[in-house]
Length: 266
Ligand code: HH2
Image (cartoon, rainbow, N blue to C red; front, side, top):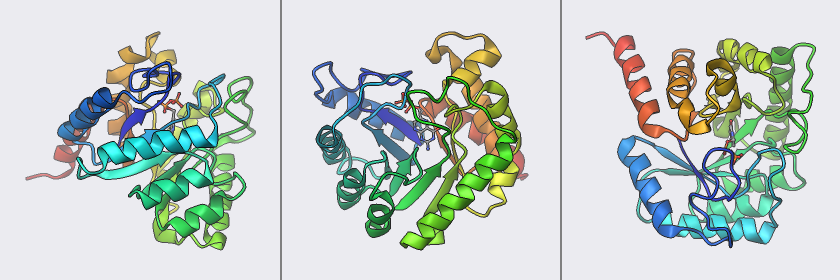
């Protein structure tokens, strides 16, 4: 899954696809989507609001307009699945009408109206764990047992989604690397991926370029963390993770190809 951030302030690629005045850089968006698809992406994930701590808030109208414009530009040109990185019920409605088939919600459908909008959309939903809110989540994350708490949260959100009318077959889970987690929390969750996979739903993870990779490698610049991200993607695939959300599709595809070759002798 290739990440297309239509933002000025995303942590690794802010401003690349959106001008400071809020206008979409259509040519850059098309070029990025084209290269992601050529490199092997089967999903494109469109996000209009950064979840980086301290990111600028966005009005619902602005968020809807950005996602709608990007889908209008991309959908007719690329034969891939479109995902929308949003927590906003109106965006769920509009994006699914325009052909998005996955609603990727870092707030796990907790905004008022989100469960109902997701259920009505017929799209798949990614329920992600986050402790706290983006503004403060990295201040002092604390868990007694991070793995048990993340799994309990996801199980509760599965129940809420199902009660609202989202069938089992539409649910995807994500432990939310870097969302209210220290390095040790992230590593513990990564080691526990088989437990998450065992819940029986496809698991999606997003680790590319994140701070946890900088902490392990000492690489300050997000763009210098591509190799580290590809290694984690490969390991995640070995653990049964179904979807890798990444800023670096080519490197990730290579890593997954090697793992696949090892798994399929002959
Ligand atoms: N991470 C980010 C955003 N959305 N969605 C899921 N399901 N899982 C993730 O790990 C995840 C996500 C953060 O990355 P990015 O979109 O590049 O940054 P920003 O939030 O600054 O736009």
